[in-house]
Length: 428
Image 1 (cartoon, one colour):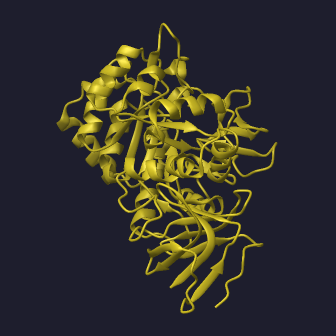
Image 2 (tube, helix red, strand yellow):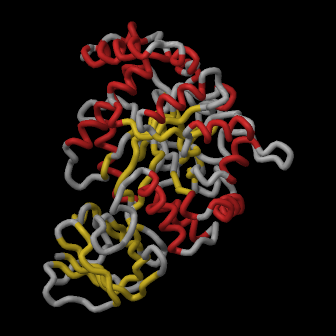
Image 3 (tube, helix red, strand yellow):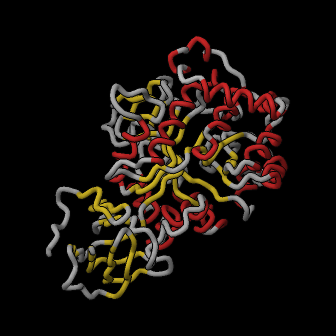
């Protein structure tokens, strides 16, 4: 049993301060006004601190110099990212890829499967992947590799039997990563075959619904249980509503890589803001989206329909000027974003603890609403029952923050997986 006492507990509907939280067998056993137990195995006194649900990042490409598509000399990139994220308060995440070749996608999805089947100790929970897929609009591709983009129409024209045959071929071809020449050119159906092969490990797929065949692909993905997210898209307001009616339920980094919101042409952003069915990602670094517009979007949709993301690249956590990669493309850590060599913004350098700070300090949210957006909403949208909330019986995935909202400790499944050097020492 572990007892955390004295901190302000950020609950779903209020802040309990001071409060005591008891962890037992990986779950929260009690939440009560401050009353430390003399019988706890470990007792941490956290007066002047906050305890929030563990952050869940559904859109993160990398951190601390490692990209999800990197080929490491030792170990898996996904596992390495999972090892590094708890220091930033992240207890679960969706490994995210840019558009890539089938062999690269297979490698990442295999890593996701292994990490989910046999989680390494002291690492963030690995959730099904988020594919910023090959099926986005080239005019809004941003840092996505243009050579990897494909038309959804080819998929729509493929028969179910042909797709199954491609999936079986992909599953049997264990040497694919050793044969790059074969994958230097690939079709849309090759990508879909990889998604089909690794279906349980693919959670979110971003696509542009206005592309020829986009709605058919959306319906196909949705029918197989994937969360289809609208993004990197030039969809009109009407096209976006049609995509929502076809089954889209998420929006990828609202306001970024889509037409600007206009009072005569609301576009994709306008449709997302009004549609109750859609939960919207927002990059909460205060740079990709101005804090005033973040506040406006949350007011329009409510915290329960918005979730904070980092869209972090491997440059996140590195000093300004550091070099890293995004899907094999060189990037540099800038003062506020990651950049391609030509100056194109290539994702963020923010981490989830800093996103939480932005929401409270710059956007002006309450601690409760900030925790909802960083933890509760993503958990609910991904169907993670008993996660993303501080409540009796829920998983003990939580973060201790100091008075400046910096991470002091991170717990996953009731285990202390990260402790800052200056963290409070336990008294028994």
